[in-house]
Image 1 (cartoon, rainbow, N blue to C red):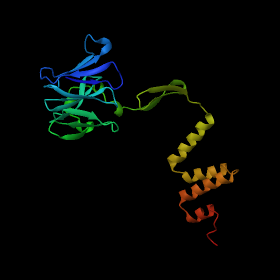
Image 2 (image 1 turned 90 degrees about the vertical axis):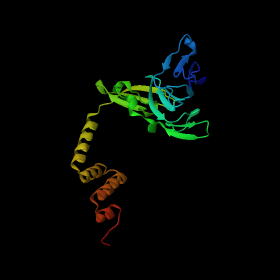
Image 3 (image 1 turned 30 degrees about the vertical axis):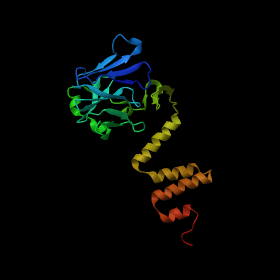
Image 4 (image 1 turned 60 degrees about the horizontal axis):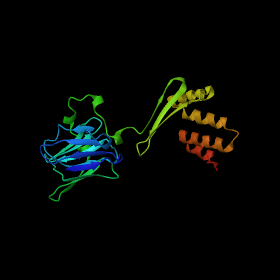
Length: 238
C-alpha cells in the first residue's frame, strides 16, 4: 500500500496499492470518508509502486507502476498529462526548486532525472478538445489585465503561493495627454526622431539640463560628430 498526503490540505490524501488487481489511485478526503473524492484509473495496467504530490501545483500527482510507466496526473481533469515508459520506479520525488523536474529511483540502484516537458506523450491527448486539456499551474499566467467599459481596467496577480489578487481601477482620461501620445505615435511612425528631440529641447528651454539632454539625444540620432561635440560643449574647429 502506498499513501501520500496533500502538500497543503491536511485532510486529503492519495492512496494506491501495488497489487496488480488494483491498478488505480484513490483520492480521499477525511471529511467525506464514505467514498473517494476521485479515482484515477484506465491508464496503469499493474500495481502502483509510488506516488508523489507536486509541491508547486497541488493538482499534479506523479505515479509509478509495475507496468513500467510513470504518469503525471492532472487531478482537475482526472487524466494524465505526461508519460514515461520503461521505468518501474520504486520511489519518486519532485524537485523543490525546479518545478518541472522530478527524480526516480529503482531497486537495482538506478537514479534518473526527468523533466515533465520531455515526458509529454501526444497520444494521451488524442480525441481531447482544447477545453479538456489543462496545463499545470506553473505554465499558466500569473498576471494579466483587460480593459472594460468606462475606462475600467481589471488586473489579476498571482503570488508564489497561488493566492490571486484581483483589482479594478479606473484609468484617468486627460485630453492633453492623449493628444501628446497621438503626436508621439505619429513622429515614431514617420521615423522623425530628430524633430521630436528638437521639439523637446525647445519645449524644455527653461531648464538647461533638460534642454541639453534632448540636444544630446538629437546629436546621437543624427549621428553627427560635430553636432555631438557642440552638444557636449566642445568646439571642433578649435
